[in-house]
Length: 192
Image 1 (tube, rainbow, N blue to C red):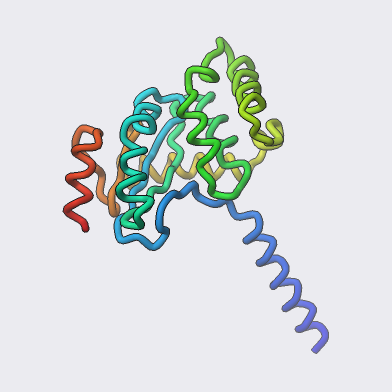
Image 2: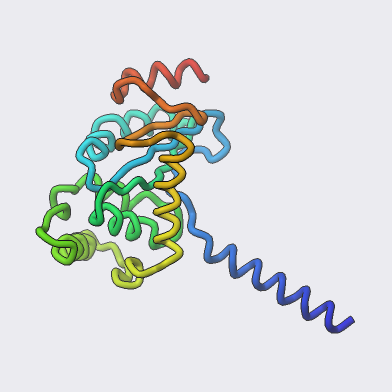
């Protein structure tokens, strides 16, 4: 009987530990919304930054904040600087978009450098200047976060044929029109 109890307690604690370590998706909106949007993005992509500047605020105001839709940001890094920034954006493990949004809004401040080391240094300086408290080296070297980011990229290529960023998926269907708010709104209105 003691053995069964000890095994049960061990299993329960290891399940809790696994859940605590689970990396949360960066998600905005009502998690139970009928309309589910997935955005595959690369943090060094200027088109992705433009999406966050020109389209996302309207999408957030009309669909995400009202509970009609949710958007889940997935990683599709196109280079090592984007890969490292993706790891940093997931590092706090809370699903909050603050770091991601700041990286897009200020992309030109940190996306520069002639080497990976220089790009990382610029990213680290930017995060400090913006007041984000992350253990930079620990985040970059976290194998679980690295796998999470790489699996997003693999999933995008395999399941949605993503080959450019940003790529938008609405209710598991790839959005094929020019990505502007007018076209996106038309597609979303059909689903309400």
